[in-house]
Length: 266
Image 1 (cartoon, helix red, strand yellow):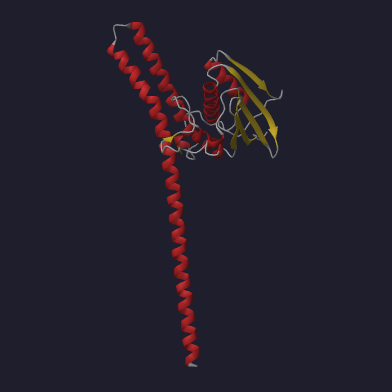
Image 2 (cartoon, helix red, strand yellow):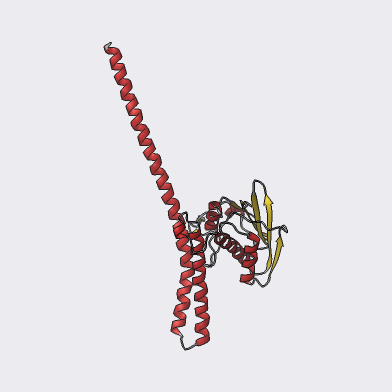
């Protein structure tokens, strides 16, 4: 009898210990999840801060130049126009970021539309940029295709890809935009250029926030001029919309970025 009682007590102690270990494990998992979320948030905030710094630094420079030479009216006007253009670009990026907010209080006024026409967005971008020296080729179905991506997000992602393509071509070449309905209620967008291409060694980490090369220097995947969101942010935006983005490239022949995003319900 005493032996059975002792065994029961030992079993109860083991069960209690297992319960305690299980609770500690659950707490550890929650802590790891929080740490991962904070690390991801820190990376995203770093990317955003870097982009805004790239834009605002020239804005400050142009404004200061105009103040230093107010008597030179043509120069001052040109400098202020460039400063205004940079500040407008910063506002566009802020709008695209806020549009992704789950809380409607933080979305830009009028940002109620949750779908867009990617072909119309592309045409608007190339028209605004006035890409002299770049041949634009469009391959798309006759009927409009709408996708479940917010207009501000699509505008910024495509604009960044177009600007990267133009830089890769040195301002001269052919830019091809293809749009088609894909499998699983998705739409595929392709943006191809005839630029310099991307080294194979960089393709695997092209959408990473930062890439450390052999010399130890931390750099962003593609040259930045303060006019684009950056490929890492583009990747996050497309993923947040439930889509994917990938790239194929060949040195000396060009690159093609392929986006697959959900088709908007009719």
